[in-house]
Structure formats: C-alpha cells, structure tokens
Length: 261
Ligand code: ADP
Ligand code: MG
Image (cartoon, rainbow, N blue to C red; front, side, top):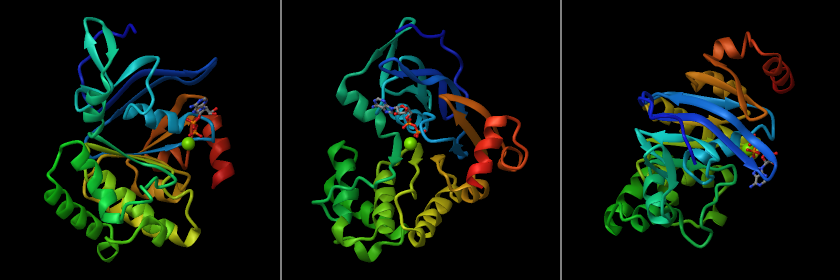
C-alpha cells in the first residue's frame, strides 16, 4: 500500500485520508481527523454512514485500504518501511491495540466470566499485569463505575446498564490512551441510559480522550468539545457543539438534526 509522505504528528489520534471499501462499496471516502489529548469528540451521522467502520479502523478491528491511523505517534496495525505500510503480525497488532479501548453497543462481555473476571482477562492475556495486580485493578475500576458490589456476578445476572458499565471498566483496564464508544446506550432500556452516560461524563471530566458515536444529541452537546458530522463516508462538517448543533452549515447536517432532535 502506498501512502502519503510522513507528516508531522500533532494530535493524540491522527486519522489521515482513510479509505475503506467492502466489495465495491466505498464506506470511508477519505477521512481526516485529529483528536487532541483530553479532547472529547462526538461523531454524529445517519445509519450506514460509516461511523462504526471509522471507529473500528482506529483500533485496527478493520484494516484500511488507503491512509493511516496513528495513536500517540504510533501506527496502529501497520509498520512503515520506506514509503509503504505493511500490516503487522497478529501479536504486534494486539499489543498496539491495547492503546485504544472500545465499548460496543451490545456490551460483548464474556458470558461465562464474572464481572471481575471480564475486567481482569485482557491485562493478564496481553501480559500487561500479573493476575493479582489485574484483579485489584479490576475491583477498583468496578468501584469507579459504581459496581463494587457486583464483582462476582455473571453478565446474565446484571442489567444492560450494569453490563455496559462492566464493559467500560474492562476497556479502562488496559489504560488506553483513547477510548472509543460505539452507540454505548443504543441497546439499553431508556431508564438505564442515564447510569451509563454518568460514567462516560465522569471519564470526560477526568480528562480521558474520548471518541463517541452517539444519537444522544443532548449528551453530545453537554460533554463533547467537538461534534463531527459524518455522511456517506465523509466528514461533512465539524466544530463546537453550540455551532454545529444550533447553526449547521451543511444541508445534510440540518436534515439529520431535524430528524433526531
Ligand atoms: P454506521 O455505523 O454509520 O451505521 P457502518 O460503518 O456500520 O455505518 O456501515 C457503513 C456501511 O458499510 C453500511 O452500508 C454497511 O452495510 C457496510 N458494512 C459495514 N461493515 C461491513 C462488512 N463487514 N461487510 C460488508 N459491508 C459492511
Ligand atoms: Mg454503527
């Protein structure tokens, strides 16, 4: 794969001219996005616009056809040799991926493991921590998301909101440099949305770098430093919430907001 010449890295996350197709369908059509340390970016856009695919390229759950993603100056999923990128071996991909946490819509907890075991698994499996240290970290993270008393519960014994909070604790256990959320409250009953948003709000306030795909416009407005509007695999506009949400420049943004607000 040929790439643009090495440019100076400025942000914590640097997405440069990312293209991605499935079969003949181009899903990402040249995405450029820079996220600064401590920044909270909310990604909005219609269904099928490429939001999940974009998030998944950031931790290399999806490869890219063109362009590059760096986190803290390090390429994710690839290494550079001359002016070309080569995909890394699985082991190295997994190691670099620990820098990017991701929380999915459907929690994706291991059903046969308790809450604390779910949170302990990755740091031990990746060699980041010894078992005992991983367990005490897991317990303190469960405490942080308000589930100190649920450590020994299995996912099926927890509500959707509690499961999602375990998933957040699990993502934090690898001390990622950036945390990605893909519609973290979309699968929840309405009365459980608030407890998950509270946890994300706390993370935002504590200076964690967050990229959040959400349809919760009010929440995005409250916590995001920047709103990015995606449609048809492109970023159509971005800016401070009060500007993009109140006075959108692009007709597609206006159309989208009219539907969801
Ligand atoms: P969004 O999250 O904004 O709803 P996605 O990134 O999930 O959008 O999907 C963008 C487009 O890519 C959709 O048309 C979807 O059907 C397609 N797509 C996503 N993942 C795959 C895949 N693994 N194989 C084929 N097509 C896919
Ligand atoms: Mg999606």
